[in-house]
Length: 349
Ligand code: TXA
Ligand code: MG
Image 1 (cartoon, rainbow, N blue to C red):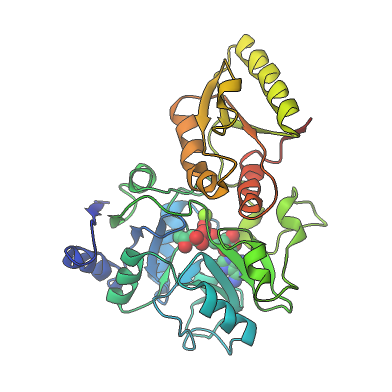
Image 2 (cartoon, protein in one colour; image 1 turned 120 degrees about the horizontal axis):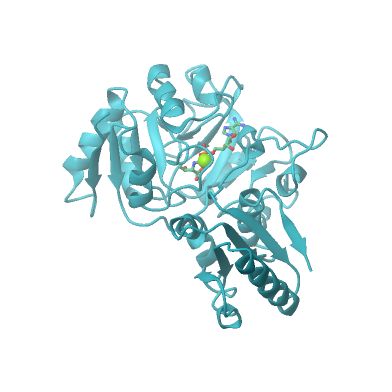
């Protein structure tokens, strides 16, 4: 398939270019586009044939439902009566990295919701995404724009790497601000339950309803008794090609253990990458250091996480050793993605 690559500088000068991509959506094509969380791969959410193409292009399991992206806070045409809590959340956090799970109306085809009677829905905080949705005259179903299982792309080059030749168009904007996928909140239960942590943190959600909690299965390895409620959370996800191991403990012990492991792997002729932060960078003499940001600003760490995992692959790493983060604020989302990338291979020190 021939993939048009269209780079957008701003939505005023490049309106016609966005319109070209919107026409492709209208005509049943699939288009990758920027959002504030990660890049998405979109199709007309109401067109079954178009949505089918997303699953094929990504190699995505059919039992994994898609998120519907809207350009307006009024979603009455798509979902059954929204509760007061959902309305408050929409008011406070949209546009932004919060997906709400709500009861769907029949207009949403079964392929989009993977045969569930609910739908994930969000309004992205990215002007290119919002223009694209508006101009397509529909709502856009979009998973992250990666090949299934790989870390989500946070810039246009990574989209091109994964999807060139597989999609009709790639619309390029700037690097994603958040860098991790949206927080998913199930609003079909009372109190609502976080199914996937993200940029809208638990602390932020609790300002709206202090009873909100996180699905207990999300931070643990899934077992028969403990399965995550979001279908997509059960897959080994966000995984680079290299083996990832997490070292968890207080700072000094973590660094000591990391150094010992680096030596061991180098002695065994392995290429080792260390995912670290500015504060610790100088402590490591051997191994390839990849700095995610500072522990003082976990949003920066989140923004760089997926790109750094992909960079380790580019560097030819066999092993990636990652320091753990405090499970607070966006640290919960960071640890969720790292845990999954590592297949829960965590070394406690
Ligand atoms: O930030 C994001 O959410 C990005 C951008 C592109 O918007 N999208 C994204 O989509 O991360 P995806 O497909 O990679 O992840 C969607 C997740 C999956 O884990 C899926 O199982 C869950 O949302 N999900 C979707 N609809 C659901 C539903 N009705 N009930 C429970 N989980 C649902
Ligand atoms: Mg994804």
